Image (tube, rainbow over all chains, first blue to last red; front, side, top):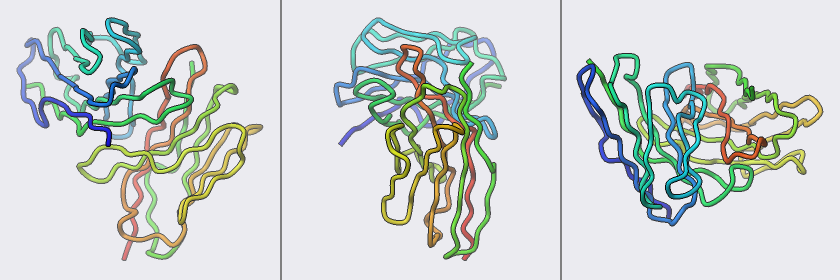
Length: 114
Length: 113
């Protein structure tokens, strides 16, 4: 059974802080994703990675960066948190290309920036 | 760029009635269309998917239909039950050489007992 975990369920940070969100998957998946979920906007892709040290921008990468040093771990970094980054962040992983394989999601991190 | 539109944004049905959620995609080369269900406070989970070489797929009370010519696909839930209440997301694969989906904006389905 695929397991995707995220480091925190709830996080409160101050404006300007550097924020790290961690995601770990235990199924040796090649691909990992970070999404942001906001009411009425659905799931929007921030960044994804299809291999260790490889990353590609998604649809809303501004204000974010990522790191994938190990296959099982994908980190989302907010260099200087702002209030408009208050949101639910979901990590996902898949074993192959999007046109062939489903994505498995983590439980989400609800980030509040004050 | 690629886009997926989803309608309606909210849907209320009486228990036992059917529910239909519709999505339209822009990339005519998209070939994989999953549907995810997200119950309150939980993670999205795949409930059904369809590939472009198939027009319809059914799994018990849920079915998905695909019209490639019109570039739209729909989720059908029959004999709705209270546990079907959730947010449903459609998605379409992107074919520009990347590994991602584009998700719709979601439909909040409420099944009234």
